[in-house]
Length: 121
Image 1 (cartoon, rainbow, N blue to C red):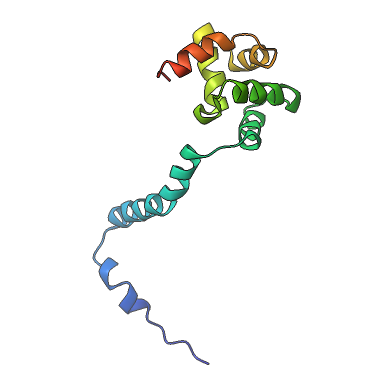
Image 2: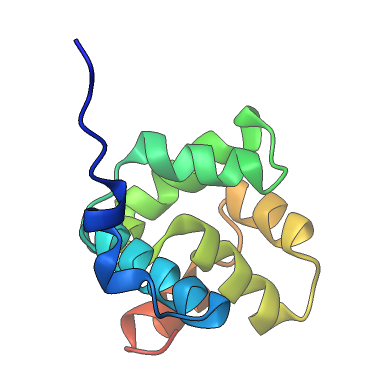
């Protein structure tokens, strides 16, 4: 079975585009394709996802677990627990790893809650 090559016909609408225009078109279409996934990631999360984020930020599982538990308790998972840690670090002007260590011990949640639930990020 021989395949009919329709490449020339399929690329007709692209043939007069420059390399820069093709590049821009590629990234525009890529953004369009992944937009639903990005939208879902902003709307839905879970403790497992948030723990995974913390692990990728450099926290141990022993630190990540209580941070996520506190975040769940204070209904902050939707804000992104990594964002919560970074917000606390900024508020205290400390390294984010130190901030996460404090949050994992239950320290500083009052500051984060006031900031995050006050509508600010």
